[in-house]
Each structure stands twice: as structure tokens, then as C-alpha cells.
Image 1: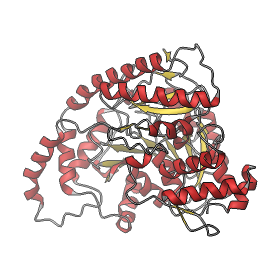
Image 2 (image 1 turned 90 degrees about the horizontal axis):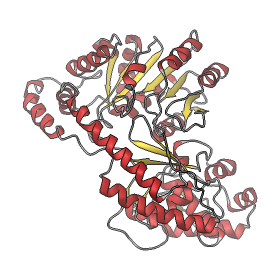
Image 3 (image 1 turned 135 degrees about the vertical axis):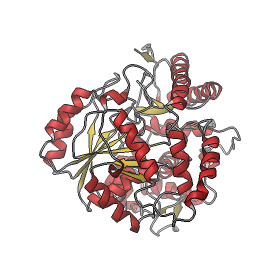
Image 4 (image 1 turned 120 degrees about the vertical axis):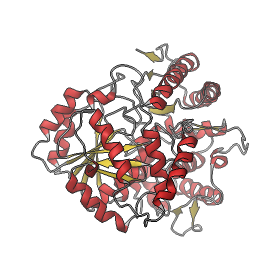
Length: 480
């Protein structure tokens, strides 16, 4: 069950940001929480009387909001019965058209920061298929992953200055799957898990699903390209005896910032002797667009550091290949425990991954200029269309982390849907309703699509601004 206090934290400043009467604004806010995953499916919501009292509104307001959500297919149960969250049949992009009823066939999706497939993906699968017959006499189950792929991944770490053997690598269905395996192995219900805040939304979901107690440590509120509260991270790990900390230090998703090598060394020194397993998500480590490569800083290592890697951001999201780099003993325990969860990664995909990883970095070298141009293009268009927004230039990664002139992220996301633009609201990247003044804007689409997205975003922001009585600030959006 979702308690009233928890739901209120998720709702944030819901009132006064949407259109129409209070019940409609409340329904819109709850619907958005369900759609972007901040409220789990089949979760029981507070009763009408309890929620009305907690929100300081009439019971009629809550009853009408729940009724609207039931009519739309987002809640089950009739009036007077327990309300549980659900998704309507056939839910998808067309469901995100808010209340306008105007279905848009040209929806632009900015909810995912991913690129289309690398041009070499098809050719890699063709070569992998040619090599597949040699594997067919075997049983095809590889708990740790194909030896060839594990050695290929290990050699990439060695080139970074991190001595690694194939025995320290476990192949997974992407980095998220690797995190889930680690949580199942290490975490018990109620254990604290420390993470930087904001962070990757699916990681938060995985931590919560494991029954862990989330312990967010805020990134310094700076528009620079780096900066972490190293002392705060170390204190949070030690104070609660956290068995795990999950950090995205290399182009943090969504901010794009990098932790300096000196700060990494200081963090490892502060955690020396602790029982905290430091899980570093390096999904975006190869996507440095400006300044020193993240690979340089990431070479700092220690025995209780576990690294997650993936090909989803740099190659293609449809290639579900990731890996865990850890101490041999941890890898062996993971290989034994995974049998109750999955039986390994498909052999064909692993063979294709070998082909793609052995290209000498040519594909990534070709993608970085494209991403750099799109990043700069999006920032320039944002500065023209929304000059009161602040859009720092990230050193790398796939998105901008925009600062809004008011806490309107969720309301803006709902309004943008009516304009044919899908967004992930800022609170999706945190807990307890944080980041209503933030919005992640991926720059992975073409420049024409980005132009259209900015136009729609500006229209949505103008309508929200008129309702909220916001005044434009002369502050420029681009920060160098």
C-alpha cells in the first residue's frame, strides 16, 4: 500500500500547476505518477477520507479525482472500494495526450536517452550468425558468459589501466540486469542502499523492488560539469552500515557530470575498511564529448569496487548485453545465484557483441561528433526559445539536465503530452518528490526533431507559465 505521506511526497506541488478544478489537477498528477513508474502497478492508494485530510482538500475532490482515474482505466475498484493502480488496456504513447482528446500521430518521445542502432549492428549480427554453427553442438547455457566475450571485455578494462581477467567478468542482460543480480545477492529487506541523487530511474526502481531502504545523497546544486559530496557519500555509507552504494560517476544520468579522479581516490580512502560494496554504473563512460575522457578518471580501483557496463547507450538499446566486473569470488557467487533468476544471455547476441567490441573504437569515434553537435544544437535552441531556463553543457552522456524557473516539471510533462511531446518529469530521477525544478532533455534525436521538440516544449511552458503567473527572467540559458 502507498501511504498518504508517501503519495504526498510524490505529488509535490500538484495544485495550481494544471488546468481546471482541483480534482482534475489531482487526477492528472496521480496519472503521471503511474505512467512514469513512480507509483508501482497494483499498489493500493490511500482511502478517500485519509488522503483528503492529508492534502487539506474536500473528500469530494479526492473522490472525483479517483473517479476520473477509474474512468480512464488508471485505477481499479468502484467507489467505496480500495483503489489500486493499473495501466489502461492498450496504454502507450497515445495515452499521454493528457485531456485534450487530440491524438497526435507525430508524437516526439524524449522519455528515453538512447540512440538508434549503430550502423555496424546489422553486419555484426550477420557475422555472428555465420559463427553460430560452431556453437550448436554445445548446450548453449553459459552462466558466466562466453569466454570469448568475457576476455574481450576484460581486455578493454586492461587498456584503461585496470588489470582484469576473464574470470572477473559476468555477462548480463544489460547493466540494469547486473544491478538486479547484485541486489539479490547482497541486499536483505530493510538494508540501506546509498546512491547519488538524482540518478538513473530504473536503478531506483530496482533498489525499491529489492526491499532496500533508499539513502539518497544529493549532488551539489551546481551548474558545473563535476562535483560530488564525497564526505556525504562516505558518511551515509558508514553511518547506516550500508552494504551497497550505487553511483553513476561517469556522465551521471541525468546531469552528465563526472567525478574527478582525486575525488574518487578520496572516496575509496574514506570507505577503506567499511563493508560497503561500491557499485559503479559505467554505462556512459565511453560517451565523453568535451574535456578529458571519463575513462581517465575511472581507472581508480579497489577490491570492493564493482563495475557495471553495457552496450545499450553506446551501440543500441536492443542489444541487451552488459557485464559485471568484480572480484573473482563475487563473480562466482553471482554465477551460482543467477540460476534461480535467469540462465544466461543468448549466444547469438554475445557473438555479435564480440564483433562490435573488437572494432577498435571506430563506431564510438564516429558517434561522438554527432552527439556533440546535437548537444550544442539543443542548447542553442533552448536559449532562444526558453531563455529563463538554465541548461548547463554536460561533458558527456546523452542529455541535458535543465533547471526550470519554477517547480513545474510534473505539470509541464502533463501539458507537453497535449502538444505531442513525451517527457520524463524531474522527480522520476529522484525520491520523495524531488527535482520539480528540473527536466531531463535527451539530445539523441535528429536536429529537426529536436527543433520540433523545443517548439512544443515552449508552447507547453507558456501555458503553464500563464496559469502559474510566472514572470520571465532575463538570465541566459547557456552556461559555460
